[in-house]
Image (cartoon, rainbow, N blue to C red):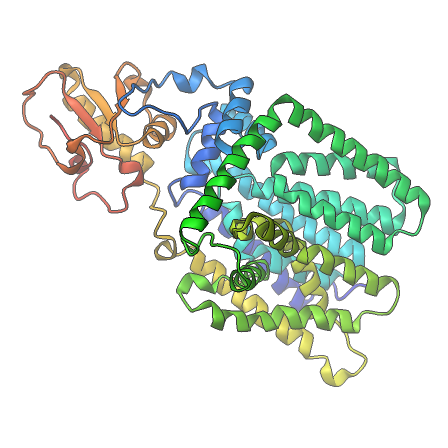
Length: 519
């Protein structure tokens, strides 16, 4: 069923909202410095490990070249991320070989993949329901989703894994509903394997595939094809596990043991994860549901007990969609979308009960089920009830849910809402250091960094090739980090020039010379 032409006023507004949601991603790519998790992706792609560095040791800029090959990338991924995101590390590695090392360029693949997720949601919704306006509504929900927006401007593997998992799911629906040919089965298995190698947590999507197949599959040939494809996926992932992946799993298991020890010592250790209790399970489910439905109002500080009330809107949309779905194929299709939408929460609950902590409710893990929330809410917003009296319910609830989503997305881009991440000052840092090194070049300067991460980022994104011969070391205990020197004569040799951890400094420098110290 088609609803209006693309030139109809409502559809034009929907297309404009989709395009504006896409554009805003690219505008904000370079506005923030890299935060903690993003540095792990950069370490992986550069073949360097973030752990086990000895403070006081030297840092050599040439390491960025010497270790920048595929074997070192694999080793770094195993040490830094436990092997999780192997495929993303490889993709980012080759991207970094050709792209300029700036925040904008390095994050660009994440933004492009976020756009691909939006386009896949639009295309899949239209393919399943044949409704043009419904597909555009799904695209608007997706393009302004605060969770996908933040994933699109983060240098992590979430949008890559989400795009691959969604592509695999679309192939599954085409197989179940339209009896896809051989290439559809191959594509389903191939996308699934790459998604798992991009992020292990996508496994809950493929558990959902089994449940959806049980709901929709009626042909033994389809089951035979899916079983063969599933076996191929298992073999491909097993090859990775046999060639290093299991070593990485040991790293993940060790970190999980640390989390368990922490919550035993302090059940309410922080807001990131807590000990598993009925109250924290309810809180985790509520938070994931809010993020997946586009509600990020926790950025402005209201208590969760009040924000939870707003879950009424997306819940009403989904129930309205189910209520107005015709019995038979369309209702089973709506149930399939709901199954895929709740898989992230069901998986998180199982992991939390098994591990004793709630880190499985981390918001980014819900990103893989987010497209199905967008599709299900779009079905509800576009539903046409038998009684015209209630025809306003779907569009009204949809508009309110979207308004909250757009508001949340805009708030999330406000610097004050993400105080843990400072503005991008890497280019400014280069200017500061260039002036300082030029002023002390005759005194054989040495760079001292406050952390290995700071040294790595400076050398990666703010380095000048003319500095290659300048020795560097990591010395966080140096008292020079609390002092500010002046442009006096060289009273000591060699001169120590400190890169005052400016890559993570939250305040703006009072003067270009205030970010470096001379001894």
